[in-house]
Length: 547
Image (cartoon, rainbow, N blue to C red; front, side, top):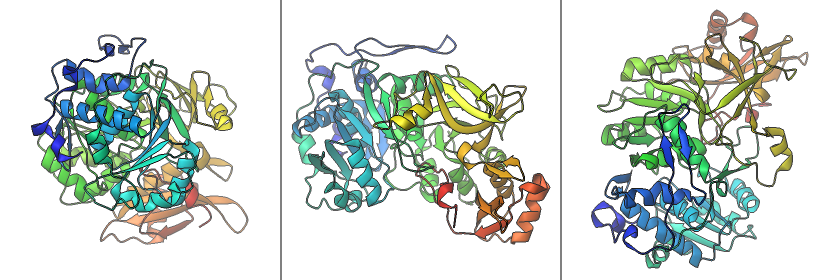
C-alpha cells in the first residue's frame, strides 16, 4: 500500500459516504457449542471483515503492520473500495477471476477484499512457483485480470503471453522492488479510482475466492470457497480455540496465498478488529526472529520446519507478549513442541487443516495439549476414521481420515474426477492416515499416498522422519519408499544436518532402531542441503521418489 494511505494520513472514511443498500454482517454466539454463526441472506464477506469495523467505530484501530508502516481499518477499507472500482475499470465483472500473485503487504488484503466487494473472485497464487507453474494456473483459472508484485514480474511475464483469457495486468509496488516491464503500475490506477459505492449483492453460498492446493502430491487443484466459510473458521477456531481478541497482534510466517496463512493473517484478525503483521520477504529464522522482537505479537503461526529451524538458531529468545503459537502444514514432532515450550515459555497448538476445508479442523488447544498428537476435533467439525475395507476403524487402529463441517469448498474447478474422489456429500476425504486413542486424541500416521508396505506391514514415513529428527544432529528428514535389488520396498531417508552437526549413516540407522521397530529403519540415508517443499512447508515426497 502506498505510504499516503497509512494510519496518519487516512482519507475520508468510506462509511461517511452514501451507499446504496445497507451492509449485512455476521453475528457470532460463543456461548453455544459449537459457536453459532448467523449470516443474513444478503451477505458479502468483504463488508463483514472491513466495513463493519469502520461503521461500528473501530476504523482507527490498526489493521495491518507491514514493511511500509501501520494501516488503520479505515485506510484499508478506503483502499479496498478504490481497488474494487479500479478492477471494474479494468473490465472485471462479477464472478470473473482476478489472479493475485502478491507478496504479503497491506495491498494484498485491500485487493483481495476489494475484488470480493465487487463480486469478483480473487485467486491468490503461490509466490514461489516457476514460470511453467504460473502458465498452468493462469490458463486453468481463466483469470480476467492479474495483479502481480513487481519483484515477481520476471517469472510471470512469459506465462502472461500464454493466457488467452487474461485481459488486464497491473504491477503492484513491493518492498522488495522490481520493474514493471511492459505492464502498467497499479498505484496510479487505484489512486485515481473513486471508492466503490455499491457492494455486490452476494449470498453466503456464492463463491467468494479460490485457493489452489499446495501441490504436495502433484498438480495443484483450484478449491472454490464461499462467502460464509472464512467467518466460520474465525468463529470455530480463532475465537473458540485460540481465544483471539481485538487487542491481539497476529504474526503468521505462513503467507497469505494459501489457506492456513489467509486465515491467520487476514480472516482471524479482521474478524475481531485485531492487528495482522505482514512481511513481504521469505520467512527465514532471521526474519521471523526480527518480527517477533520488533512487533511483539501475541499469536504466532508457523509450520513444523520453521519451528525446528528457529530452535536451532541461538538468537531465538522468549518475547514479552507471545501467549500462543499454532502449527499446521505437517504434523509437529513431539520433541519440537516440547523444546519450544522449554525455550519460549509458551505452547504450540499443533493442528491439521486443508485447502479444501479452509483451515484447522483438528487441533490441540490451550490446557489440553499432548505433543505427538494432533489433539481433538475442533467443535463444529465431525471426524470419521475409516478402515481399509471402508468400515469404521477401531480404537488404536490406523485408518483414513474423513471430515465434515461448514467450511468445505464447493469442489475443484474444472476437475470433476478429483472432486468426485474427494467430496462425498458433506464428507471430505482428506487423504491423511490417523489413529484415535481411547481418550479421543488423534495421532498422525502420514499421507495415504506416502505409506510404505515393508515386509507386508504398513510403515508411515512420518514416523521414521520423526525418529530421525530426534537425533541431536538432525535438523530435518524426509522418507520415501525405494526398491532394493529384489524389487522389495524399503524406507529411504534424506537428511539435513544442523549447522555443525555430525552423524554417520550407521549411527542414524542404529538410532532409529532404538526408537522404532527394527524393520522400520531406513536402509539408505542420503545427506542433503535442502528438501523439495511446497510453500506451506509440506515435503514433496513424490519429487524424492526415484532419485
